Each structure stands twice: as structure tokens, then as C-alpha cells.
Length: 264
Length: 280
Image 1 (spheres, each protein chain N blue to C red):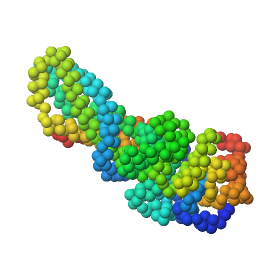
Image 2: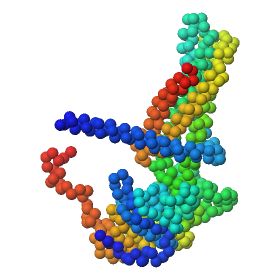
Image 3: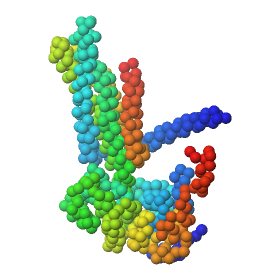
Image 4: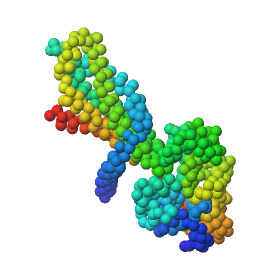
């Protein structure tokens, strides 16, 4: 009888958590439905957008550029050790550029952005909620969706693709320093092979499309988690964690789907 | 159980600004309001009192249209708040001011910018006009000298006074105070009590004060409603409330630990809890 009860409790718990997930997806849908019409408003209030671009974009630059430099250097180093066995070390530039443009650039930048800017967005909005600032805005007849959420969403949307490009540029620079400056790869071959094998639409644009998709995903998750956070310090803390975990896993899963669609 | 102290006529005689009809509201399985009826007169200070958890703040949010009732209607200036379009609701809210328990100042703005915020959002006034208006409101709450501070640099009492200045900067017709005296020292409490009364009289406002601080509320309110278990169990003037012979009102007004609202959370006795197998 006790085993039966324990089993029933487990099944009930599973049911309750499934219902919780479904309810959360429903709330996310409603949140998006109300947020999307408010997004154009962020371009009318340009000063709010610029401020958020600074917070999400400019303040993320140090981590993005530093990470880009080291990722490019490591990638080139590893690529060189493989290619040199086949006397193809000049192709290391091509390998670095294609890996970065197609996969690593958009994905690593998105993961870093989720950790740096996404978590900050959730914490900020969660705290605004717990300190009744969002309610106060509503009471002042100012729509928080237009005033708070829309500029942050648009800023993430604009900042992430730009950060991705900067990450890739920095990584290629890192690769150049390692390949040409340290390992002695011919400079002309390094750039010429890269230029001839990288396709604008196939590689650069597809990478950018990925980046835009990741920006949508991260901004949506970060803003929703902040909006949906329990108005307590524990609630804000767990919402911030959820943002980083859900965004990171979402980026990796979405990357697989997009890669399968783009390069099949 | 009808413990109404004064007749309803006393409340309906002055012009009514806010009319609550048959309001029912619940959170999950918990019924907060059960068929609540209330009229709030124009130009007066009306206090809504009751123990913690009776839904006083929820009532303010329902009046302001931030929450939707399960049943019933709320009319503000004759408009059914929950049937208004979003734009019309926001228009109505420009006539409302709300003082939140925490102050709810925007933390990234200075005191001056917080008070100027509603003016900048809702009017096209130039900065040369906004500045004297903001300073005037800050002067009214005695904090003009704090205009360059950030909210993090303010004490709790100062935050509430700044929030009050922000609440009245658009010259609203009504202002709602959510637990304005909680956690304040006696001096700040005295300042807030005086401000609420003076602002109401000098600006011709209608004030609704939600609180459980009996002495402070009774000293400034024109009318008092006492809420319990989703209903108004007593209403009238402060004098009538103090002279009430209702056990519940007496317990609440005098702060008695036991009475109609029991001291113990449940009926279980100490001996019952100690019986084998009962303790956790």
C-alpha cells in the first residue's frame, strides 16, 4: 500500500511539473504576443534604445573581443598541427575563417552574450518587478512593454549580430598572429586561400542569420524570465540561472537545426 | 454578520468617485473578496483597514485596473475600469497617483528625474517649465535639497516622500497610499500623516489610504472601512469606529492579541500536538 502511495505521489508530481511547464510555455506565448507589437516603439524612443545598446553591446565588448582573440588563436594552433602533417598548413586560414563564420562565431558569441547580457537583463527586470517599479510605471500610465521591454529586446537584436562580427574579426586576427607571426605560415597564402574559399551568402550571411535567430531566442528567454520571476531574491536568482541554462541549451539546439537546414 | 457602524447614507451623501459593486476576487483557491460593495467619496480621505493578508493592497490594484476581478464591477468617475480599452485605462491612470509601500522609484534615475518622469512622458512641456514644477513638488514634501541624490542614497521615509512628490506631479484627482506608515520612525510617520492630510485638502484630492496603523489612520481619515475575510465588516467615521461595541472592531482598534481573530493559527491544542505520532 505504501509503495502504491509513493508511486502515486511520484506520478502526481510528474503531472504537476508537466502542467507547470505547459503553463510556462503558455505564459511565454502570451508574453511574446504582447511584446511583439510594442517593439516598433523602441525606434521612436531612440534614446532608450541607444542606452540599452550601450548596456548590452558596448559593455559586452571586452569579454567578446578577449574571448574571440583566444578562440581564434587556439583554433588556428590546433588546425595547424593537423594540417602540417599533410603539408597543407596554408589552408589553416580557410579552416579558421569557415569554422568561425559558420559555427563558432555565432554560437560562442551567443553563449557569452547569454551569460553576460541575458543574465543581467533577467536580474534587472526581476528586481524591477520585485521592487514594484513595473507596477509604478503602469500606474503612471507608462506601458512597461514599450518603455522597458521593447528597447531591451531591440538592443539585443541589434547588438548580438554586431558582436558576432567583431568576435569573428578578432578571432581571425588571433589566428593570423599565431599562424603567420608565430608558426611561419605564408601571409599571402593565409589571406588568399581564406578569400577564395569563403562565400558571402553561404558562409557570412548564414552565420549572421544564425546570430539573429540566437538574439531572438536569448532576448525572449531573458525578458520572459525576468517578467515571470517570483518577486523575491530567491526568485530573481533562480530566474537568472534559468536564463543562462535555457538560453545556452536553446542556442546549441537551434544551431543544430539551422546548420542542418543551411548546409545540407 | 453585519457590523456596519454608520448607515450607508453617510458614505453616499458626498459625491462618489469610486464605486465598487459586488466585487469577487480570488487567488488560486483562496477567496480574497466575496461580493464586496464600497463607495469612496470625492474629496475625502478614506481609509481601508484590516489585518495583514485581507487584500487591502489587492483592492487598490483592482481599483487601478492592474488586476481583474472574477466578478463584479468597479467604477471610477463613472467609468467601468475593467471594460476600458488599454489606452482609455492609461488615460484614467493619469488622474491617479499611487504611493507604493516601497516607494517604487526608478533606481537608474535621480530624485529630480524620478519626479520629472511623468511630466516628460505625458506632457510636451519644455525643461524650463518642468524644472520649477518638479522643484515645487519636492518642496511640498520637504526634499528639494535631495534632488540630485539617487534612490539608493535615500532612507525609506525619504523614498516614500519622493514617491509622493512623483504621485502628485501630474496633479491627479485621486491618490492611493499603500501602507504608507509601515516601518517608519515616529518623525517620518508624523511627516507622512501631515502630508497626506494637507495635500488632500490643498490640492482637492481624493485619498485612499490602505493601512493597519490604527492611530495614524484614524487621525487623518474622514471615513474608515474595516475589511475582514473578503467583506467590509465595519465602516464609518473614525469617531464611530472608536465608539463601536463590535468585538472585532474593538480587537482591531485596540490591538488585542486574542478575540474574533484568534491568536492561534489552528484549533489544535498543545497537548494534541504532543501526542505520539503527531509531531513532525
